[in-house]
Image (cartoon, rainbow, N blue to C red; front, top):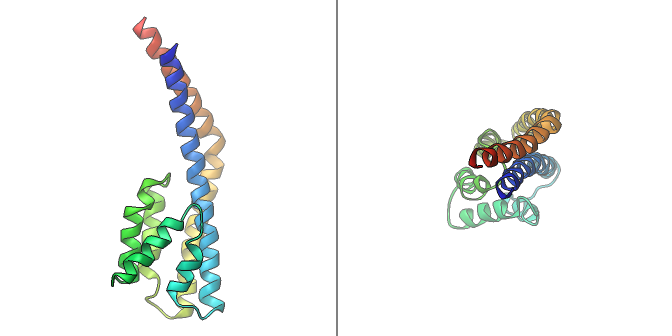
Length: 161
């Protein structure tokens, strides 16, 4: 009984992790929109933009870590890459999303305003397509994770008996 319960719990954990992954992608898309607006219409320094973004529940630590690394003298792209590795790799995001976020960081601050806006839009499009794919598969994957978790727990308890 305990084994089947554990299997079911594991299935629910996988389901929740998948849903968190979708939420993290949605939140990052919102930050990209805010970043694009700041680059396009405000004349703020990157430190101010990151400071505004650092209040977020999902990505606050990420943006704070970037600011900390930049204050230590690292370039934005290096601070961004290190922060992805130190902070975001411990979230529900997979390597696919992390790679896109890292690639974005390599482009920020390297070009003039119009090119940066186009780069941000490019990464917004990549993440939007990924988000649509995740949302499309959400119902069936979550159902699959839950069912396999419960079934796996029942199978193990049958084997043990």
